[in-house]
Image (cartoon, rainbow, N blue to C red):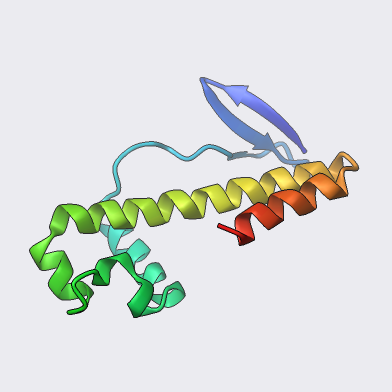
Length: 113
């Protein structure tokens, strides 16, 4: 696996010559993506810790009363998810380069978030 730059984006070149984007597109979320991200948030975050339940009346009520803040919370969730993936990719690269202690440190940073 190699990292390559193409048109200003960073890609991971796989052995079969396919490439996978390493850095996410910075465009805005579509409505469908936002709905999927919120569903993922619900599956991974208890309601009492969810940023979409700040008023303790549930995420539907919060989204209705504070749509801009709800979008920001979903975007923040996506950003953190992307960072976790990036750290895991960096940890894999460290392991491939023979640096298991650096890989372990990267994974620890994600767990401690």
